[in-house]
Length: 328
Image 1 (cartoon, one colour):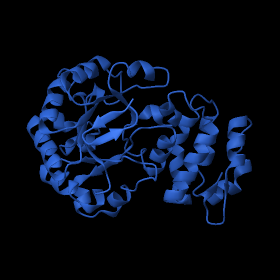
Image 2 (spheres, rainbow, N blue to C red):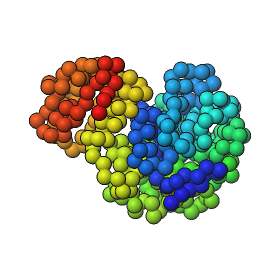
Image 3 (cartoon, helix red, strand yellow):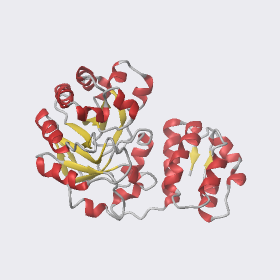
Image 4 (cartoon, helix red, strand yellow):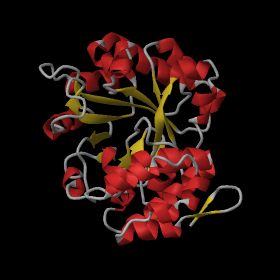
C-alpha cells in the first residue's frame, strides 16, 4: 500500500520512527534493506543546525537507499525552524518532520519536544514557520496522546497541526507523563486518524505479532523500539532473516560510516535487542564492554566466545581487514 505525503509518495505504509541514539544512518540503512518505506534521522536541533555544529551536520548523512528521505528537527523557536528548513544541508531531504513528542526531561525543560503539547500557539507557529521555509516540501509532525495523563488532547492538537499545514502526522499512544511506561492507547490514535484528512501513522508497542492488526487501525504504522534488533519486522514476514546476518550487516554498516572504535563501543546498546531472552547475554556484554575497538574485539574472540551456537558463530564470523573495517 502506497501513501502520499504532500508531493512525496511512499511505496509502503510501515516506516521507522526516529529514535535518539539509535536511528543513525547505519541503522536506517539496515531498516531500508528490510523494507521500511521511510526512515527519519535522529532528532536534529534546529538551532544547532544554524550554528553549523559539526555533530549536528554529521547526523544528516543519508544512506544510498534512503529515498525518499526525512529529517526530524526539534526546538522551541519558530524562527529557527524557518531558517533551518532553508539551510543547504537540508536541501537533499524530501520531508521535514517536527518532534513534538519527546518526553525527555532535558528536552521538555527547554520548551521543546512534548512540551509543545502544552503550548498550542507556539506549536502552531513552529509548524507554519517550517512549512514556510520548506519550499514546497511536506512537513510532518510527531506527537503524543497528550502531555498530562488527565489531559488527552491529541485530537485537538492534530486538528491544529493539519490547519497549520502538516502533511502527515505520527501519533504515539502514550502521554509525555507516561514516558515509555504502561501501554500505548491505540483508541486515541484511531480517533486522531478519524479526525484529520492527512495520513496518520500509529506508533507505540508495535511488534511482529501485532503489526498486521495495527495496520487495520490506521493508514500507516511507525515502528520505533520494536525494530531494534528486529529490522525484518518491516518485511511483514516476506523476508526470512537470520538474527546473525542482521547483526553482522549492522556491524558492517556502522564501521563503514563511523569507524572501528565507535562501532565496538556503540554496538553494545543494540545487543540486548538482538539477543533478547538469552540468559548468557549479561556475561557476554560484561566481557565485550572491556574492549575499546574492533582490533581488541578481534584479538579476544576466544575469550568472548560462549558455549552456545549463536555467540560462537557471531564471533567466529566477525573479522577485520587491516583498516579496522568489519568484513562479514
